[in-house]
Length: 345
Length: 241
Image 1 (cartoon, each protein chain N blue to C red):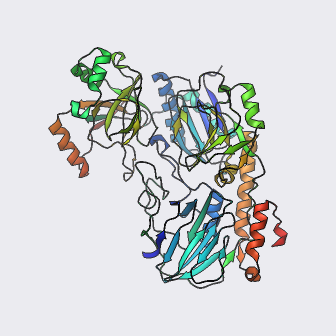
Image 2: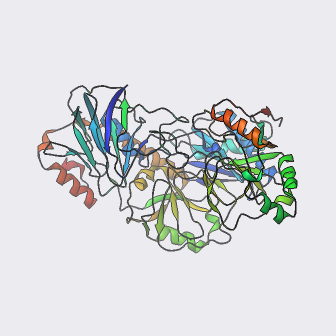
Image 3: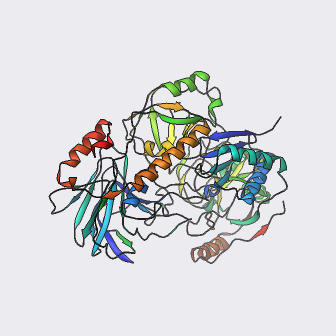
């Protein structure tokens, strides 16, 4: 094992995550794992890692690191974020790999457009498995990931590779299309029958806004109130990532990676698995609408979404000569506008 | 007409619902189905989660479909009772000394009992673990003797000490580590109910049994020391189902 990176500044909330912890729901252990499954996997793919290798999820503001190994290869994925390297004039944009050498100090400058971003290192980090996963669960009692907590200044992340061989760096063929303007697709239930018909209609037609009281446990929404048809306390049942529960406040909460495993409030609908990554990257203040699909449709959409992700990974290609041009500006502009034309790249 | 419903949690899980209240018979049906689904090792089923009212069958939609699972599960429900999982009865030491039981006197007053009677009633009951939730390793156990049933505290605590043995409504529980909580604290166990460094994770699983064994302050200290040195395994035995 070699020291790879030393944390100079931890950023607002940086944790080690992987694809999540399976097999312990019966013990009350949350799934955890990356909020944005696709961004997490793309970061791994750009540095040639196993797609489920543990990497860093960053929320709010990005961390700063010093390279401890003789060289490392890293990749940032998240909106239009950049990597700023001390002493280098131009920032390195996201969605590509870059090789850094011992002593270099770099900061992940996170996109203002994405709630979370991912930083992967070639060869991965050496993080012990805890209950079958390397994901961090930071709430009490705190376990998994790096000592069961978010990163702090002075932490040293280790990995198997003491160096990253020089080679042509790679990039995504085209940036991701987050489709922020599209509704989030849901399957109604399991407890839509705990709401009035009007409330279900309201839920499917209204526009909600993600409030700042949102984190890895869930996104709280504000908007029209949803009336329960009777009691809003129910005898607890299981929660999944994407369950939309409506407690006594009558306002929906989309439950995410670190949510409790069981809960006693009715769940009006559930986000389809294909749309979980695009929920996870939405920031507070963004508007969301919901669209109903059937379970069978949800499964078809997921298969198509997965195929699309796999083709993005297959299309990863050598970095082209455009890097000297003002690609970052072009790139950022398109993401902010939400109008993406892959042909421009 | 079927006496269960299969509900959807989108393309992430099927929720097989057997009722809407806390009921031992419902729990047994859920546990039997859980054992049947686990035994069948259906491709794409990632895990099952028994709760008070239902069994969540979580699946990977890239491997299987809800339609296929619905078909299989419906078959298992009618066969339920033929398969049983591994269930254990645990001996859980608990110290009921007022120093370790901040609410025992108030509970005794509210129930019109002496603290000693509260201890006897609580420790002579064999509890059934309905589900584990709220926080990792927190067992919802029942059923509490009728005389000990009280509503939750009007004023929930922001910090409940780890190992607190608690009661509220028809349920008994143990807080695995410090957390907020609104239940009445009538004792403390020196053992750990959740250990992320163990493969089992939580000591107790849905379907397990629990019997509390009153211990003195000095025995509590002795067991706690052994637990800290990772040198204590609570006694348990297989439950015949």
